[in-house]
Length: 289
Image (cartoon, rainbow, N blue to C red; front, side):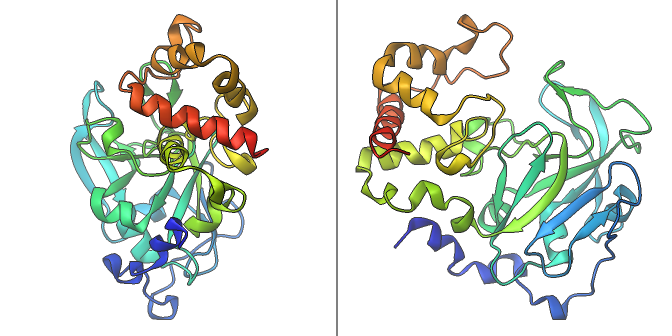
């Protein structure tokens, strides 16, 4: 069985989030954007999608204020946050959806499954010290990378880095403008459908690693995933086929080649992980994908 189909089995009991939409009180949505920096809900929700304002989101049951860093190294602040569990409970999910894509202007890939929500409890930032980004300057992630606004999703207290990441992309989605409810297997079908079912076990392990660690910024088969890097998959495949030494240096310490890159060092990529990534890139290249 396609391993992604397993996400659709038994998830309707998770968090009671798969409640039929007919049993939920419908949350008000706007067909047109009612205010600047409203967020747009699309896809297979339990009700018709549309826009919601920051104030409307803060009225959903579960909104709370916590004293926390908005990201490691930032000043402590009173953060007004809405748990994504509460959001999904309020809106409901359609019969085909088992997760949702956080849509961002900065082209990160961040996909949340219900399974991930259950184990990690990510939250959406609405206010810092009682103010939205239109009322005050929100901090820049990493000091100079990009603004968090208009919306930002993170896991409270998660300082573990990559080990706390979701299976698909990353959790710390900045510059978020929309949330699209959808089916996980359909989203990532190009990674699994024929001829990808011909991958060796080593390349399959590389696929899992690529989805979690690379697909954040680098698109995979079918142009699925983040596109921060603006480098198509064929470029990575070329390095794997003809210049493995450069690829490894680029993965573990990219700033030695591009000092201004926002790509982080993946220093934990040891021989075993590197072998998995190379196998995945080489085999997908040979399959013409």
